[in-house]
Length: 179
Image (tube, rainbow, N blue to C red; front, side, top):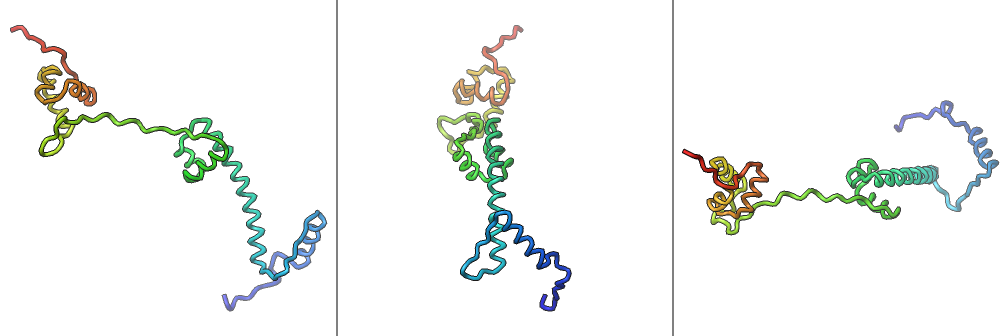
C-alpha cells in the first residue's frame, strides 16, 4: 500500500458537492459544533456511526419488545424466546422484567418413581430391569402379585408399580385348572 497512488479525479465526492451539502444542512436547521481541540476525521465518522447505531438499536429494541409481548401472550417458553429474539436468557429476562411481563415457566415432566430396595444388597442395588424381568417371568407363569412380592422380597405395591411401568399384566388370584 506504500506505492499506491490515490486518483483524486475518480473520487465520488467533489469539494464543491461537500460545500453544497453543508450549506443545505445548515439551511434546513442543522447546526455544526466546532470543538476546541483538533479531532481526526475518523473520530467524527465513528460518532456519527454511533448515533445511527443508537437509533437502529432503539428501533430494534422496540421491535423485540413487541415480539416478546406477542410470544409471551401465546405462552412461549424461554427457549422459544431465545430462538425468536436471538438473545440470551439474561437479556430476555431483563427485558421482560422491564416491561412487567412474566415468562411462562415449564417444569420438566417428573421421572417415574424408581423402586428402592428396603435393604440394599452387599453387592449394591439391583437393577430395576432385572427385578422387572423376574416379575414378568413369574407373572407369565401365573403367579399372583402377592406371590411375586413374597418371592422377590418386595411389597405388593412395588410389584404393581413394576407391572405398570414395564407394562405387563398381573393376576389377582391364582386360577385353578380342573384336571
